[in-house]
Length: 640
Image 1 (cartoon, one colour):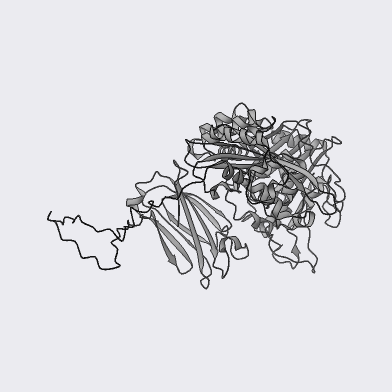
Image 2: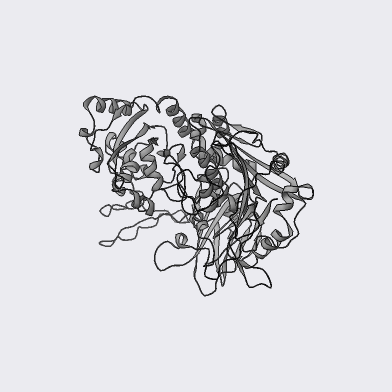
């Protein structure tokens, strides 16, 4: 029988809040985008051979009064713990419970031992997913070895719970299991015991016995029927997120296109969102339908499509010679004469060109191995700015922006493509938990490899070095600011006319004095006001009428720090804006308000709107960062 296993903690155990959530707190992505990244990159990791991975997203409503499955999830005992742990306000729940259903196919399922949580190893994916934090058990080709992304599944649920049905490729077993991740340890009213942050849902109720999954075929069959699962007999995993909040099929679809356009267009991934199918034949038109709200410009998507068709499997235009990475700049000696001529000709003609860069990878205690990666680029004369992307085994590492540091004037489109197993394993170890940037000082990569900084810099700067090498140096424009800063040696000889139309004499220019006509500052669309325990903002109607409403607003908050970026140092222990009892919001003409840790987001719907947030410590200074943009022009971003 299915049941929850709640565990009272030992008096010697520490208690407090989970710190894993904080790794995603400053992510420059919405919660839906983070969820999509994590739930698609994991199936790509678990691909069987070269099969196309298929993932389905759906939202299904289940009647709680007529469901054996839900009666075990929301038993009286479970509701008592959910209420005590502040996951629900009271024990009254709606009759209809929505579920976000995420199913993957063409994968191996959660393999490994499921009856002994102490067993570790590369094949122990079951234990790594359900019983590990901060580590992974995936193979070296893995896109995510930190083992932290699964927290996004729990965070997507109002009751921070996740149920999963996995069918394993190795033994065809179907296993049903679940877990609740409370925000912190908690007490039940009238009791002295503290309860663990993790509660398991499975076949065992006794907390002194290893929690194990259900293999109850009749229950699993009913579950598949109630939640309209497509699992059938195919290997893979169906993730069930009860009571999702802030998630719609439309914003899932947009996030899939923005985050995984490349592997879908490449034919490695197929995603179904509700009734909408995104595959190699449909994703281009779907991306086009997003208009200016899409992550990448139409021109850059066209660049990606062309290189997918022509550049990934062919012989490159050139291969850099050994030692190319030993200097800060590429030189003629980095290529053969023939390669050099081909590169320059292709670049000058704005044609696609590709370069393979070999690298030595030094793993501790092992002989050096040779890895390589490919840079593909094209000069873009009609573009306003350069665009670039790093793709490592179908996962976009889009936080690495290097071309913006180029001193060359001609825009360029570039892709750094890493498909080599050894190099991918190194970069996986160097990835931040959000999988958007690399860090050569991560403990895992430092423990496994030598020369981490040099190796990582070689990869992340290769496209920039190639562009700098192939593009003629730009010239400094000494007249760029002449409009605002007059020549001190010049004499103003044209008198201005006054209000009456008569010419007024010019004031004398004293020695060393310069007449400068500095333009007025750009008026702000939003006014900010400090309060004793918070802040308020109000629109400037005259300026707001020039905008295309609604206006998307994101406000980040943090207590001021003596050193460093306070927003990066924010900790959930400082404050938690999701606590609507202590952090009070008052608004006018504002819609779609959402709270996320230290961030609040909403939409301004009229030229005359206001918003206030109160509840901060009156004895501490609060730093506030306001970002807002128009819906019709995603590039029109302003910061305060």
